Image (cartoon, rainbow, N blue to C red; front, top):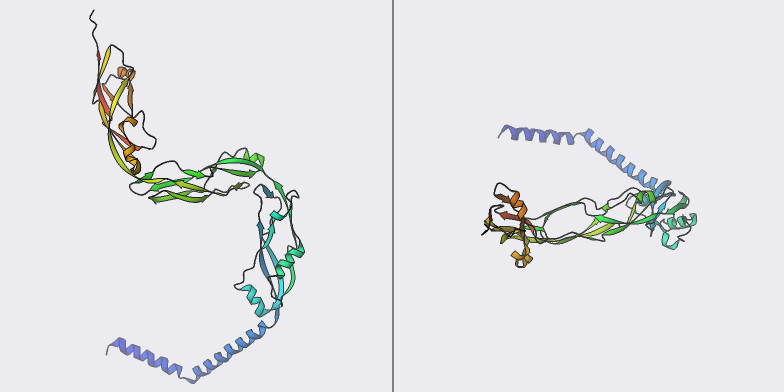
Length: 334
């Protein structure tokens, strides 16, 4: 037998001997009676009456976006109630209260005030209390809020974020924002400086298909937007490369001159949506160099670039990106 096994057996014997001692038995009995006494005391205390405070939310419905409250808006009612402890535990743990509502749709718009009378608040509180519970009081006792009408202006929306398509995919067109303009409500001095509203910053990664997201607008103190979010559609499509032979054209050549280009045709490789691969042709590209630029060039080598291309074509590469040229003048027969 190893020393470890002997040590474990020795510890077990000592623990067993301790548990069988008389003092330990007496202590166990004592703590059992103490726990039992505490249980009886707790049950007895739950039958006594106490007072507690409960919080009931206040919700404002159908608030027009073109108004602003000029008073501090209370968002909860603190009610003081009395009942037995066992009942109050029901209010304290796990109980949610239905909000007291102020529905502005049913209030005259020209009054400039939102009012919830004391009797209405009291009635809404009692609906959520048990019949044995006494309502002692609540604060605020009534709600009386003044409001004023705001100025209005149409503001264009701009997407704020970045889009990272998956490998082999690209954005195939402009973003579609709906609505593209929203109503902004604020003081005149604020609206005068407001030119656009951005969406909250949004990062979209590994996009491999056209997607639509509902994105909120950035909040600005003192300004209310309607709507508060917009729909952003991002056209994403699989792309592939296509190579075309495009001639280089020199314009406005004088009648007594001729121009020789080396090479006269270059290859243009571009990235196009897979669905429009067959739609792309040489006629949609144009490379043109004014004769005067060749005349002013003393090196005989001219860099070239596309003069025209379809808007939906991306990532174009010209090979070669420079050409050599020779200007020749015809000799007169005189």
